[in-house]
Length: 123
Image 1 (cartoon, rainbow, N blue to C red):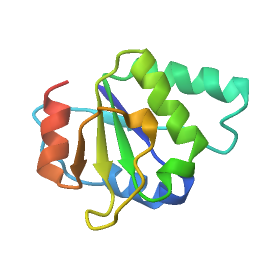
Image 2: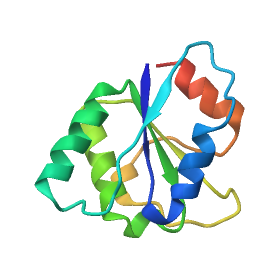
Image 3: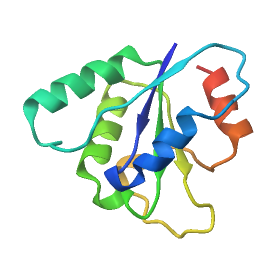
């Protein structure tokens, strides 16, 4: 099973960090993501949309950088249009981030491996 990770470019270290965690899930999975260097480019959008559509769900990493991250917000919109289950994960639980409107009523949790694993196990 594949899970897409959406994140602001400035938060790439956290994307790499979550990929290396032992989430102790009941099912085997791998993460996919996409570089956000040119989110306005149609080729990037098409490839990104294909990757999101290959996945069972999406984890959106949320920080103070997310609201200005055009690519990450586009990925969230794309996942919503594809009816993918999405969860927002706060990178820093004590950081009062600006939640982008694209997340709307999507559940947002603090970064706890057991909660992330629970989301994956429900996919």
